[in-house]
Length: 338
Image 1 (cartoon, rainbow, N blue to C red):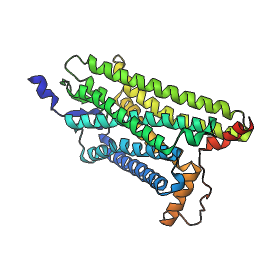
Image 2: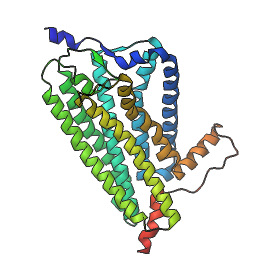
Image 3: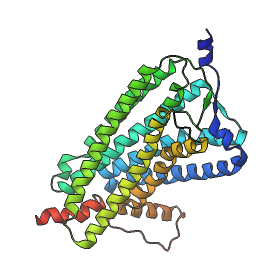
Image 4: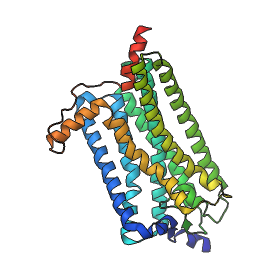
């Protein structure tokens, strides 16, 4: 009976306790970051869906990525802002379960989207003449929806296994809830939950990382055969994409392994910094790397901002539409010369 009562009690987020001294600074910073992510992401999605010239696989995937960034940020920032404003450091068990579901779903689906984008670029660069038949808008939408459904089922199963566990502790070394934070607080044997969660993450990581790395390796092999200037642009694009992917992966892996390293007592601030990396950096960088730096989207965004008087009229956006990625434009010439 005692265990059953433990399930319904409130949980303390120790990361919020650590932030209390500078809560107003953190609150303002959180509001600015959240509004920036949402505003820029919505602009990109609006531009892509309103301009028929951007109704292509790459731009659909970019929209998908930034929409997922809004979802991930919204599962984290609003509650954090309210908690900082009200000096609250607790979360109910039900809300914790819901937040763990959303945060984990965001992370898993982000991996899927990164993988689809890498595969799209591989087809655009290595098979430019067959690109339009190998990957269509309908196929991209089906793959995206299928990936989301698969991720939701896997994550929901893991969270439901955790939800059943009675809790003996109430303190988490974080500012948000994740699945493993709940598992380590359980009173009973949680080996089934741990094994299932570990199996899902390891399998997902293996498949997505393998496809991503092989795709970019094939792109790199093709692009080294172009001229020096084109090679420099292509390598810069590859490094930029892989850097963003690596930052996300680093934070995701830390959340996965940190509770499996029980002998290492890390300060709470380290737990917080490494955990929020996955929820802040990718949603912040994705609109910039995949949106603003993609010439076709950048041109349309500037045009839209000029029409709404948000951007100064002295700037003339580029009118040329780029139908595939910059990598494809640089490297397809190499294919045609072969």
